[in-house]
Image (cartoon, rainbow, N blue to C red; front, side, top):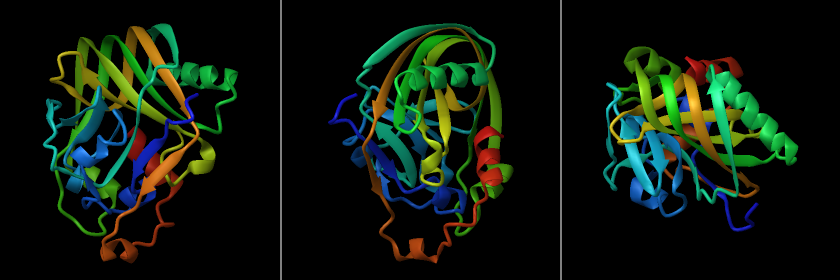
Length: 241
């Protein structure tokens, strides 16, 4: 575990879930704090995958492009991937089996109450994912936006990477407890928020993180949100579809 490494988070999941989707910082500012992670863009304009110090935008049809450096970011969590632990995974039939093994691996090193950043490069038989069209709104919940504008898609027999973060239960509301994963294809043309996968083989790089810096929105509008209203059930529905 590196004492220098930190999780850098933009806003909170509770704020995003309750509809605060305005820009807090830009993509270029975000990448000064971490090279690996995930999030979304202003007005929920697609899913974010940060990898190798670049920020990719998965659009509603599952295609991916480099995000413009000036694009606004309402929510994200990134860190520097050092790869302090590395191991192989094989024949994982679903996303839960991947999450279960990752959790076992961090439990072995007394990590369940810490944060983690992970990247898994591998071969996937199937990736079930989503992204969404932008929706300009104020006080419209993320669940409502996704109900209107979310598109699901499937990639088959594809090489690529799962990129994700782990937050412990006691940080619920700041981010989603457990593992949150996004996908990016090896050729950087396809990706999205992951619902499910079948993975044939993968190389895992994993870092434990015990520091967090949170950039809260500075706009006055942020104080018009009552940030205890989003239920655990609503947040889980947003995460798992």
